[in-house]
Image (cartoon, rainbow, N blue to C red; front, side, top):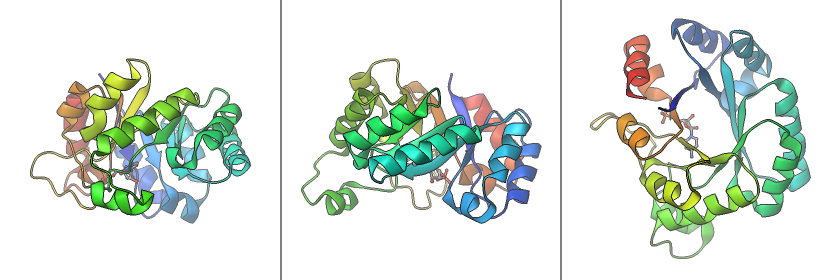
Length: 224
Ligand code: C5P
């Protein structure tokens, strides 16, 4: 059993709230930078007022004090989960945890849009195995006190094995075989993600771009 998080990657708060209202039983919604920058924090408050847990996904990666202040602001706003980027380093992750109080934080390991070649460009060295990179960053995240990590389904089994049963593993890039992947390089089906130990599945376009978002949501709720 895992939580289904719907990524409300839509252009306006009106559309986000309308969709949230149509998806009966919605427990978690993810808000990203586009909606937050355009609409401000009111959209978070309005979702929370509907009893929806808001996952604020801004993937903070900055100097420790700046990230700590952002985490404090997120906690005060009432979000239920937020992301930092593990590539910000151990000191930044620890500063984030110190500011978080009871707000759970998860660390992004390797973006699901990256393949080995893309990640090699970022780190400036050969990357024979993205699973190794995700494990390395995941261990650092947990050692710094984060609640868990964000990772692709491809690294899930390795991470569950390395981190043990407790950490949350949040998995975006959920697709059925044959479904359009868009910019996601490493996708996995909802069933497979749950089988490999995901605690939270993040799904955007397969729901919000579906001809019938409510039916797509229901199918995914059953899968998790
Ligand atoms: O539309 P799709 O299902 O691909 O959306 C995935 C969501 O998960 C997007 O909002 C994206 O920002 C987010 N995400 C991701 N990869 C990560 C972390 C978050 O795709 N590593």
